[in-house]
Image (cartoon, rainbow, N blue to C red; front, top):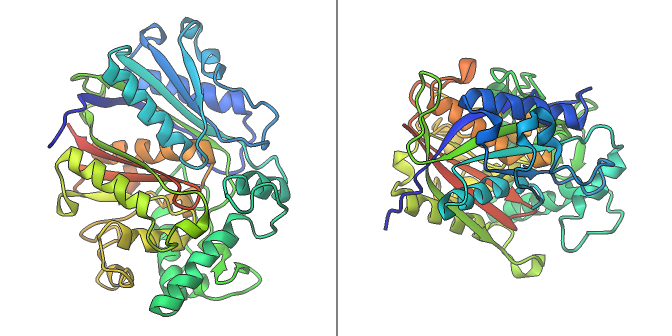
Length: 391
């Protein structure tokens, strides 16, 4: 049964991702003001705020839910809630905002996602992030999450043959796409040969994953406004409707999960597609949570874009490239755009909304009417899919 969420994304804002001099507060204030201006709303019209930040010790201020109030005094008194769900914190905050709209307690909701990561040393970031892993949390695991996803790549190669070249092609695709994204952290055109070759400039991080297979440590923020009912976007591009949502959680222990199934991601995908009443053939593009290139490859197969072990065929026939039938990560994805954890899920939806309103600039796809956006926390543990429509 197709259900109507009767909700729209009516405004948004996005900072550049990378190593930024701006403070956490400055990033939050910038995107809060930008999203309100984009939606042409007064601060007094916001009924609830959901603030996404993973943190886990990467920043001394661990309680940031009130920071959006610094953007405009009339936000004083608005209920603000911090949402933390590992790398899916951003999508979790958005989905909580949608629940507030559906319950009738809010007409307009502000969602802010932010992270400051680069002021923490590599060991500190690694320790913070590995806290989202059941087996390694609290340990000094030197490979971090790259080590956990390397095991996925190793298992993929064991079952289906070496995937190193395929991962290099995915990395090169992401880098090419990011060249046109003014918000991206890594705007560098690394070709397939560079991405497949282990070198001083592209060392192994966790065999078989090279540096070009891994998303960078980034600062950044993104924000959007969710509005109930028919609330067209203020620009000439029109509205972006939230057509379907899906959320599914997998078992935490690795022993209870098939490392190549990403089963709860598949469930979230199907729930969102069913709610929206669409299939893969209806999609104009997809943004997936490619924290590592192996995640993108497995997700091709998880979402039914290709049979198990055949994800590489989508690169062979050009399907997932910008000019293909179903572009994947036209933004450059987490891999090249950057991955400031709390901001990621919000960023994905902001950039998808830009595509759907024809306001994506150099990133713009020729035709964009329906998008699916996937945000994931941990190794396939917390999974969110959102289907968006133009209009």
